[in-house]
Amino acid sequence: MDPIAPSPAAVSGGLRPHRPLPAYYGDEVEHRRFLQRIFDDTAVDYDRVEGVLALGSGRWYRRQALARAGLGSGMQVLDVGCGTGLLTREALALVGPAGEVVGVDPSPGMMGKARLQGARLLVGRAEAIPLPDASVDFLCMGYALRHIDDVDTTFAEFRRVLRPGGRLLVLEITRPAGALGQVLLKAYMRGVVPALARLVARRRDTALLWRYYWDTIEACISPAEVLAALARAGLAEARREVSLGIFSEYVARRPAA
Image (cartoon, rainbow, N blue to C red; front, side):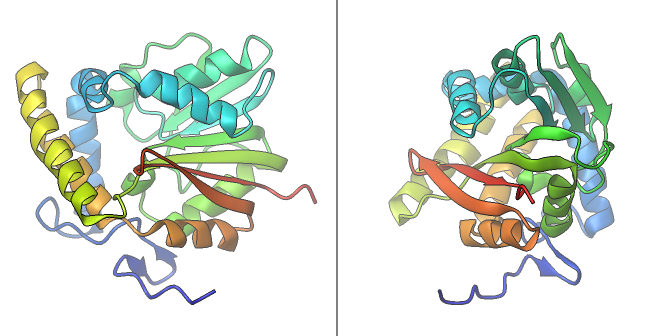
């Protein structure tokens, strides 16, 4: 296999999920403040606009992806970057009353809008998960990889909290391989979705959030780099499944021994 070329997102001691975006923030301190503010402020609109973005198919897809990755009845689950609980809700349905689901997110505003019964929600970051070692059977992250600080540290945390043999699923939107697909997706996500957000949203910054959403997709590290980072963290059998050319499902497991 050819070596992966150094990424503009690479930093000393870790790997950023995407190159810096100076249109939104200056340095990494401002980056974290920007994310905290915009997610807290737009939480009231998030689920409504996400429904527009996914054309109503998001709930069905999330549940199917979790099931494909091996989530089942009775499991102990951690949803990292749970936000308003869109993925958490589907995990709860799959594990049933014998299972347990914990959601972790740095935005109290987003979690405050989660309409969940049966899940435990904790304020925390992917790079420092507030759970003990080897405490969950399954870990998921839905469309939040682009918003973390350090991919390597995050994946090391994933391995730490997973029990031996435990599985993980990271969902992301990835740039299409073809130029035409990229142009069409960019027009939809950076043009159409923000325009619709302005019509249905209560918060002025909601359109800005969805423009930022596309810009992080466009600037994100490659799928090969994500898979390499999973392997560096000691997670086995890492692979990527793709739906409709843009929906990436990264799956891996903590080795049993």
